[in-house]
Image (cartoon, rainbow, N blue to C red):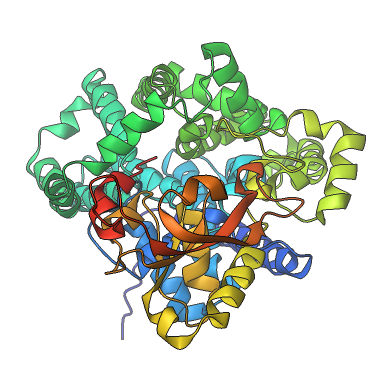
Length: 535
């Protein structure tokens, strides 16, 4: 009896998958271990994580300052892992592992072998920006996953043009692109750069097919609910972005400074991989569209004065090409000829040692006092910076935003619990920003829903509270509040040694609404429209 053996079209695929999965598993293990350790040494939830959890409890097709995917991510994490810090961040760590995996598969799709795969994935695994991004719940950890899947789909279409079935990868492109736009609207700029790059190169031919139209339609249909939400809510995201520009929220970098930040974010020693990768893409006719995509996107972000890390999601394709550049340049080397995954051991050792040296800047693995001593002794404190115009005190904002939340909520909890039951029923908790409000909602016990005018908290409204009795967290003073209330008492003070300086503020208990000059009683419900703060 004859047996038919079906072999894969490319026998290298299975080996490439195994190696990519191995590196992805290493990446995942690093973040799970790091998050468990962070909780052990006293680092808490990051400010934005509270907000994303709150959004996950108010699932919708859109939000003022982010897409709906991170809210789904937060909701799933809370349902699966409860209040576990490592559990909350597990999906972000998994997305980071997917980035490493996709880098390996991009190398394979571009014709690279194990030496190129190993170097490219090692590089992406050690990028400081990625280590930091993937260490907490955020939309940024997922960006590369969607962007690189789109590129992989197009590379496979071009690689197998003779096979009509390869056109179905346009469906993968559409699904990944659509979900990516829902994850973070900035993917739109990447897609625009990608479209222009294809139109400028011979690869434009793949755009004018039935499957390209289907894939584009799928992308639009997936992203459409968010667009309709924006229209229904009067384009809040555009208002949020405009306010950020007018308020100079982010630090605007010159072209030279913006470029230098890329080298710093990606890791100086790692530039020896991705820079040759960019050169290789631009020099090779069949891959030039990928290099042009990067250049166009980089220029768009620079001209828009975007935050420097907005470029980060696109770098894995440069690492993939860079790995191939090394493999090609050193093809005669023994370990390259032997097809070893670690074919450049000296350079790999330098990368690992360098990563260990600067790792405290990417992951908070040291208690604050020890971190300050280490960065001062090594000079790393001079390159630890913020992307927004807020003084961060002893620690950079990325770390400082993990302190002070439990202390805030404990004080509010004590004040609320000390109120008579009848007063508790009419007492609202009003916070100045979404971090404070989100901490109350997540860390509090049987507290009323927190109120804030910032971003999506504004859309959720005042929950029926009229302001007869409020616990207020705000940068103001008692004398000012006495213009609106009969009784104002300072009942606590938010802020710890390492928390952000602007979070050092009083906590007030305000009761007895006053009449204004027209004899009208101050009402939180009526004043709510003026509380809007999209920033």
